[in-house]
Every structure is written in C-alpha cells, then in structure tokens.
Image (cartoon, rainbow, N blue to C red; front, side, top):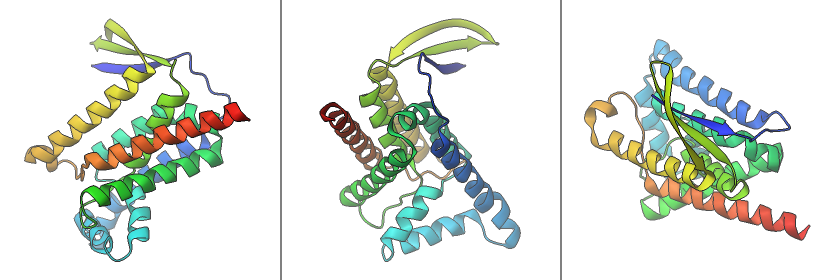
Amino acid sequence: MCKLVKKNQPIKNTPWIVYSLILLYVLILVFIKYLLPYYGIAFQQVLRWLNSISSSHELIAWILALLFHGGVIHLSAVVFSLWFFGPNVEDLLGPLLFLIVYLICGAIAMFTHMYFRSSNASFLGSFGAVSGVVGVYAVLFPKAKADFVFVYHRLEIGRIELNALCITSAWFCLSIIAGSIIQNFSAVKEMVYIPFTLWTQMGGYIAGLACGFLFKMTRKSG
C-alpha cells in the first residue's frame, strides 16, 4: 500500500469551501445513486437525462455536471484531490476567490472539452475544476514537499520525498492512466461510470496554472 503525506504545509484558516464541496458531492452521489432507485429512478437514467439536456441547455448541464459524479471511485478521486491540494490553495486565496477560481477552471475545462470533442460528448464530474486547483497549487506552492510512503502490513518499508512539480505531475499522469483504464476495460466500467476526457483535465489544469500566475503577479504588483 502507498500513501501520500504532506510536509510542513500548515494552514491558518479552516478551508470551509473545500469541506463544503466534499460534503455536497458526497450527499448528491448518495441521493442519486442510492436513494433515487427506491423511487424507481435508476442512476443511469439520471446520467442519460443529463446528457440529453447538454446540447440545448449548456449552462444548466455544466452546473449539474459539476455536481454529479459517476460513482464511488470517481468521487473518491475528486475528494482526495480536493482534500490534498484544496486547503492550502483556499487558505492563500481566501474562500470567495477560491470558489471563483474553482468555477472558472470548471467552466474553461468544459469549454475545452466541447471544443476538442463535441457538445454531445459526455461530460460529468468536477475533475476539470479540481485540475484547476492542482494547477494553482503547482504555481503558488513550488517549494511544497510530500512523502510518498510505502507500507506493508502497517510497517513502513520506505519513502520518497517529492516536490510540488513531481506531486502535481504524478497526480496528472495517474489520473489520465486511471481514466484510460476505466474507459478500456469493461470489467472496471461496470463498477463506475466515468466519462474520461483528457481535454477536460488539460483545460482545467492550464486554467489553474494561469490563475495561479495571475494571482502571483497581482500580489507582487500590490
């Protein structure tokens, strides 16, 4: 087993936006995946409905896509990414600016996805917005470090220290690999529905980098 442990990155304020987003995402997934079926509405029906309105009501579809996730594995990846990168970014930007940047990155991710794929292609989840948070983290915390710890039967057998560039690059590559695996293996597809799109992640990540550099320049000029 492996785990990622942050080093020397304390926060001064409670990241309420990050915690609120995580709670909201979990509650929505529980509602649509586990409670709606009791009323005869299957999870797949909700996903088909979301795809059906994407062409005629793009703004509504984008808002709903940011809130819905394709399953427990999909949501777990989003929650881990927000929990790991989000608190430091929110602490530095402040709650309001963090939320604005989060939504901007999500919007740019969606438009990038639509431009390179098509408006009818599947788009679901907040991974584009989360990718933006990771991009901001890479710019604003270049000296951040974390340990990649290897554990066997609760016994630590080794650790590797990673800097911010390695951490964010590894996150980006692993998310692409995981998305590709889920798209190509039917056995995994049965466990979780994830409309993986490389362009969504790239659009969100590049938007996050841009927002991070803009915030850095604004602070220096101020």
